[in-house]
Image 1 (tube, rainbow, N blue to C red):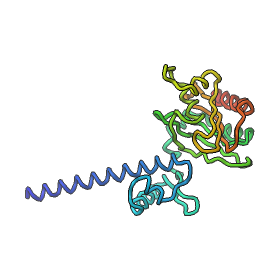
Image 2 (cartoon, rainbow, N blue to C red; image 1 turned 180 degrees about the horizontal axis):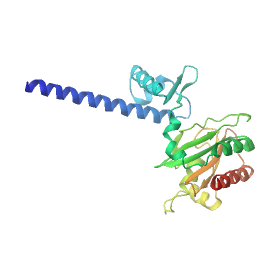
Image 3 (cartoon, rainbow, N blue to C red; image 1 turned 180 degrees about the vertical axis):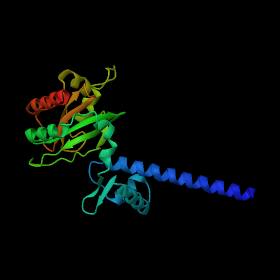
Image 4 (cartoon, rainbow, N blue to C red; image 1 turned 120 degrees about the vertical axis):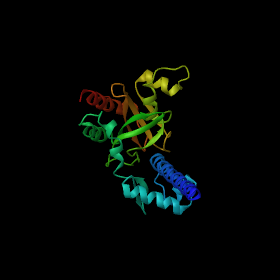
Length: 231
């Protein structure tokens, strides 16, 4: 009886370890898909995870069933429709007119507009509006994540933090000018301009696959920021 109980306990522990490993891999898969600059195939995801393609397929199937990842043979992997619900608590801090404001901002600037927030040392896209009439499209997706030290969006958020002697020059420049600009920092050929929103602890901006002129888009950005604050 004692040996049987010990064997059952060992089996239970192995099952728990396996379940935790599966959970960890699933979370890593979500992070990899969200952070990727292009849509990955299952084979590419398997390489990033360091697992066999069969295991990666199972992970994707589980996440796709739950709605967290969508798998398309021609377009690759991207975040699924269940992802917005994960941002519900943060989205509740935004005014109801947020999406309309972003849509108008995209229309005025002929660029993809977005609102981002800081999750620790990461910059995460909370709301996105694509401009379908622009010459070239940039892929800036909901849930897109990158370091807060990179890109105009990250630098704009970084500038909201308390000043520190080791703050990088782009952050100091953003504090002086009231906006952050970058080109090729996150995606080759893409440029972005973001303005911080201290009242919401977020930033709003535009991204395009061509060189943006900050002075040309700043009036629209500042107008969008004021509308978000007043709403």
